[in-house]
Length: 442
Ligand code: GUN
Ligand code: ZN
Image (cartoon, rainbow, N blue to C red):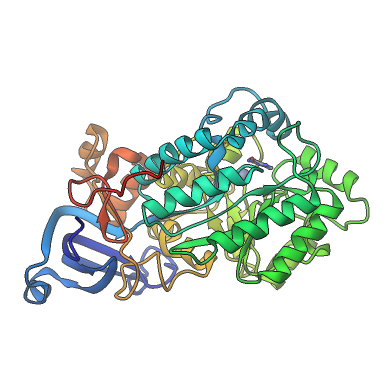
């Protein structure tokens, strides 16, 4: 049984706003001997441990000192059916998709396979400190059902959707404009707003959808304005050239999606690397969110995301792993590679901004900052406990780390799943002994 009331003790870090620089101490709250009182999956009170003990009464205490407690990480772009595609050798985007990814995704038509993989997928995600993910499922509704069922079993706040793809893909991995529409409708009715789930209407990318399917995707977005929309944009130069061949009337890649009414503030655009000035203007005007996927962009040799250029236009960028072109489930490793991509462009990713990005920043990109991404009272108790001394290399480096920012940078550059000591999802510890998961549906 999960205790109704739980008191977590440790060092607390939670962001109020995006840090504007290394000295922006007003952008976060840090409590050295802090505590969170959790009731029924929500953060009821946050404060210093001495202040909260009286209020806590007979609450069970989990003492994590001297570890660091932060909001659970948010991964805004991940492909659930690519868990067995990660680390596939030698190709760039279009060849990688046809050689490795599409054949693998056909296997998710099977309910048994999809549900077995969903269990493994969420184990991995959580063990890396991620408590919310935004996933592409396969074209089959079985995969989306498996994804949402497993997330519900764990009471996770997740976003996901079956991909729409009706061309340029092998047999067994295509829907039709009508079946894609009908299946998406059915999944939205079943899952969107149920428990902690959100649906994302998911045309995979322009190359794999006919204009007729894009039209249907636009209809879905109009009929369900509170659903998310996710797709890929300008990841690879050959992809862009082929897209413009397939949609000759489009002014540029983003215009394909604009022409079908898909682009707005609920839209997440994976990669968004090679953008034209008009596309950047359109992103700024519509509020659509580019999603930076550092390990993937390096792995596929796709290019360098211009974080500072987009931010200068007031665009809100998200950050994500993009498993299985991404090479790590860890948002810490994602920050590590992201730091280096920005270095190559003479841009800087300070650890305060980095940790804001994978918590509150990604929540803002999703419009969910009132529920997740901080340790604020009244938000959901998704919490990660970080150990910045977990490896010998980290422990040795930490001997010379004097400030919070230095500690965060050690986690950012050297941390991975080994630095995740515990993860709470809606107040339930995922690694510890308290609170077993309910049995899996047979
Ligand atoms: N573009 C269309 N589909 C995909 C995918 O699965 N991964 C990546 N990285 N890019 C894509
Ligand atoms: Zn992707």
